[in-house]
Length: 230
Image (spheres, one colour):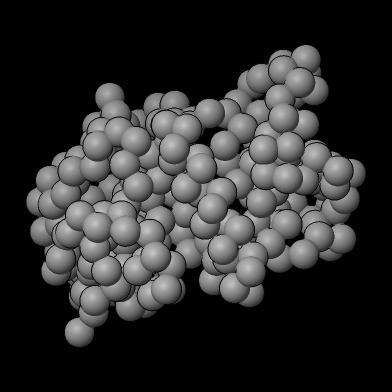
């Protein structure tokens, strides 16, 4: 369960204030697939930052599972982040590490044993169809393959929630379709998926819940929603 209760986020730069999120309220149930849509600056990225504890709200409450994110200390944040996997538009792979090593790195950071790493990393890469490219470096992979490595890395520690932040923004239509099928499969296996996207065709093809945002406000929240922005 994810709860945003009357959440606002205001950034202060010198004497100027920017409202990034304005009194946002929504609840997301376990195992839901929810898409956030909106133009740049609508507040989607702010929601992602608040969910992973990168920022704290100016007011309101953010809850992820058993964690009240507002009250977490810097020492407690890693425990929250183990519950959340994140993938990004620009992949954020370590360029000097192979596909295997990129995924293994996430397990190492979580304190997993060498035996577990050797067992589970090939399984994760197999899940995304890249077991045969475990030894390849990112420069040797296509955009779609890089994103699949990023998904394997995000899922390797079995998070409760997967945040896909514009995951297909740099991909062609064929790779976009493949990544979306993979995200749907991950959701079917029990992981809550939160997707942010500008892609109207993706949203309209999903027939999943859509939360539409504009100027930091939630303007629409619909089950089996469509991409509708003013």
